[in-house]
Amino acid sequence: MTTVGFSVVDGVATLTLQREALGNAIDVAMIRALHAALDQIQKGESGARCVVLTGGGGVFCSGLDLHSVDLSKQHARQRAHFEMRRFMDPLILRLGAFRFPIVAAVNGAAVGAGMSLALASDIIVAGEDAYFCPSFARLGLVPDAGITYHLARCIGASRSLASLLLAERIDARMAQAWGLAHEIAPTGEVLARALRVARQLADGPTGVIGQIRALHAATFEHTLEEQLRAERSAQETSLATDDCVEGVRAFFEKREPHFSDH
Image 1 (tube, rainbow, N blue to C red):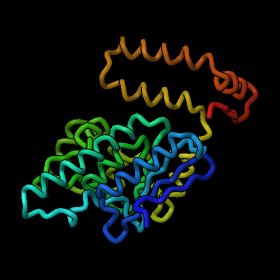
Image 2 (spheres, rainbow, N blue to C red; image 1 turned 90 degrees about the vertical axis):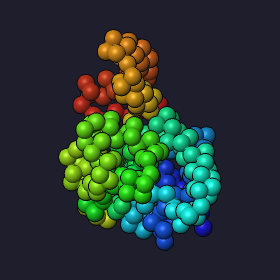
Image 3 (cartoon, rainbow, N blue to C red; image 1 turned 30 degrees about the vertical axis):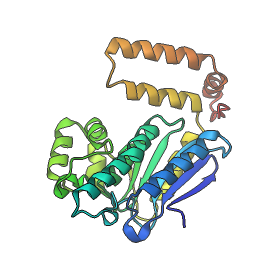
């Protein structure tokens, strides 16, 4: 059985972590499977224009699979670290720069590297039973897989630092209040709600959505002047598209737009 389920319906690719007996803990095989699924989406043959990432069995992801590492031996720990970083870091970078938006449907636990994986998405839809825990410090480990980068930008430096130092659980309501989760869905309806959000993105102007994501990512590195310049450049591109014509026409005709840039 593959460690990642893959399906495409109505322009939305759903990637499901499938190591349910281990809380969907991350190992190298799972990371490779995620890369393979993203490769397939990137080719464009599937017709996917948005990605939903979720976990099977009522759990999003319990973090790194510690059962696969002999923690009593330093060389084994170092080897496991090397193997994970060889594939995990490129995955986090790839999700942030991916051609299409990523929606995380978080059910149950998103712990350690599982929380890092959720934060690498563009939008998080969390179930009422969901919780996030940057548990690294409790294990004598430094937070990794991009969580120190993404969490600070998501909830602010002060809250992020306290969360990482104390390794405390963040429940769904707190996650929403802090801006970590976009919305909360009833337990059992998380994936359905995430798919609705994803379909809205998939039906949107793909090129413009990509430009918005790129501009948003650059905000933290640019001065205001640089950001204004980047916005002008992106706007010049969008003004020349058929989707701009359709969007404005639909506005005046008081109807939903039908974008073609897929």
